[in-house]
Image (cartoon, helix red, strand yellow):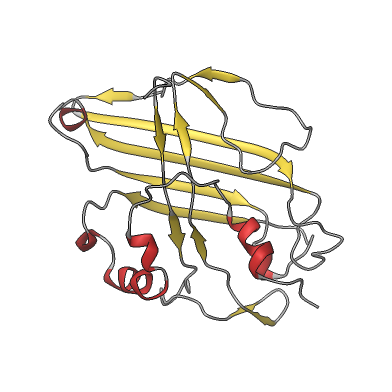
Length: 216
């Protein structure tokens, strides 16, 4: 508040699943290599950002050209159609890969990484404009394009990963798929508790470097 804005504290977790069965993968046979690999599921304890009148582009990684993003007014491109309120956000970056390809020969896609995120949100104007509410429900979509996941052991082979996911709010545990909720409760119970302390944001690749060793 003293800076005229807010700090958003978040955690994020996710699980890679079998496309045919929907079951969470514990082992995966990479069809390009015909080799069994161990998925590295998403469990990032801090994904934070400031929401201020003037903001800088959020970056987990250093820009490839070494530049620092300029600040800009925080104005979201909302569109309204009757009681529907819609928002699209797109982020694209070309950055230094934290996984040094000289050390992580099978895990790193190269010295640079190119990533795109496209997100959409749909909510109700009547709910968002209600000052008595402290939360609203929404649904949306997320598209993510990135290099091969390091645990796939694809190295610098041509290709990329494409994520396409339906998103939405979950105002209670009952809104989360039961099997996912139970898995989080079993493996990542801390992720069921909202963050209260400011921690440095950490992407999955940094955690991968800390918890895994280069494959032989």
